[in-house]
Amino acid sequence: MATNDGDDVSPAEGMAYKAKMALGSMARQRPSIRRLLANRRQEFTEAHAILPSDATTDEQLTLTLQAWDQCERLVDDFRGTFVVESTDDAATRPDQITFPARNGGLTTVDGIAFETPGIQYLTFTHDGTGERFVSNPVRVTEGDPDRRLFWGDLHLHSQFSDGCGSPGQGLRFGRDVMDLDVVAYADHDTMGFFIPPRLQRRRMERQYFPRMKEIVREFTDEGQFLPLLGYEWTQQPTVGGHVNVYFDCIEEAELFDSISEESDTYEKLFDRLREFNDRGEGRAVAAPHHTAESSYPFDFDATDYDDEVAPLVEIYSQWGNSERPAWEGNDHPIEMGHGEAERPGHHVQDALEMGHQVGLMASADYHDARPGHSLLHADAHLPSLKEWREKGLGWGLIWRIWNEPSYPGGLVGIYASELTRETVFESLRDRQVYGTSQPHRIRVEFEINDTHVADSDSTVTVEGETAELQVSITAAGTAPIERVTIVKNNEDWRVFEGTANPEADLDTYTVEASWIDEMPITGMTWDEARGTDADVYYVRLKQADDGMAWAGPIWVENDDS
Image (cartoon, rainbow, N blue to C red; front, side):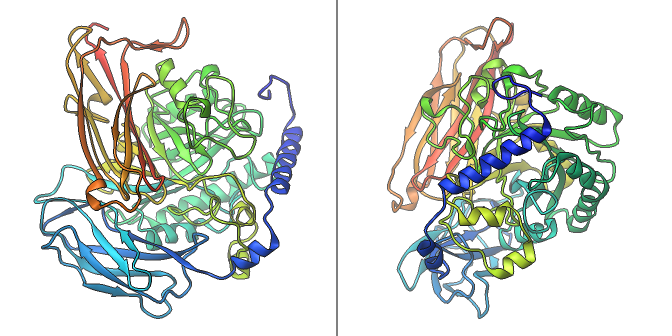
């Protein structure tokens, strides 16, 4: 095994390095005792209102309304009333909502209905402060849409590795609190909370992976809530990056771990997954993540990458954004651990320049039973004794005490015809997904010449090197949209400028824009052997409240290429 600098290290040395790195980081980021004690008292700061992202004019919806405090915790017993309004004057909705007693910071309201097609919102004005909160956008249609937008968090860790809480606790939180459609745990195959890698491997093979299959089966309710079976193939610190593996099956799924001689490199893992898919008993896809993190870097430059087996990259999580380097304009760079990898080859733009056809997704990588709403970025605070008792020792609770330089986790938007294991897996495999930061359920539609992401393998074919292309973006945010950037061949090509005012009116929440591109197709070149003849386009969106989204890519190629 080799470090980032090419030096050989043993597994024991890697574990020692990890411990030293973690303890040093904690010492640097410790908060004051006064601050920890002050944050024991909850103060209501924000309400989140969640509705399905798609609805028909004859469909009744359930609203989930949450009250959060200054440390991103649900308010234990929220007392307050919200005045409710809608962008649809004909909508069926209550005039106001008062939380019931002993609510745990959460209430639901049935019977919400919109009557007017288009993008619609509900707004909620708190009677105590006068502050207005806005729901996620809902696309309303008169008939059933061909596809609906579902939301997932596909990267969680539990007490099965180095997280806290059980997968069951997390799935209930994702389903009942965050109203997610899809959740996947991706516990480490060979690395836990300072657990020797081979011990973690034995536990995963003999106990945890079989138990995870039982839990996924137990929580599956197709059409309502869908857990996916997965795990994280985990190289040790300084050795290499991490790759999540997801299955469309349960019983047939196999654990190809990062220590076994048959699957201890990226290429061997991809080979095993390809063989698994070829057998026809089930299917799997892989997705590397925090590729630009210097302690666990995924080096596209040194990997024989397989786009078919690994069609997605987790571009964003609580670690930050691996799209491009900070010195090239990334304002959410990776700062946790040892920070951002400095050598070329680790960012998503590098992979695209090499010619890899990878789609963009996001999830949390949070180590607590809180899919859809991570806490690592929140103000430092002491978890309650009840949480320690119920969830045990793990990074999710330990991190809350320290000022980690992190971000909110991510979400994955999944376009599918229905919420079934088959259709959701097809969307992952076909790259019919995109990523946002939590908790922003931003709606993004991106197309070039009427080809959407995932249509025709996300590829537009034109005749000749020059052709008129219509590049279009339709977006509906959860806050005013500050900027939408169309990135072409890793350069910011066209920009829609909105507003940086987070208090702006609702008409700033939506964007419809298009541009004509008549320039010749140039493609990109990484080195003498690698590159792409196609032009590569994707979307980067930023809201006034710092919410983010990434969608694409779409490739445009000459039919002679």
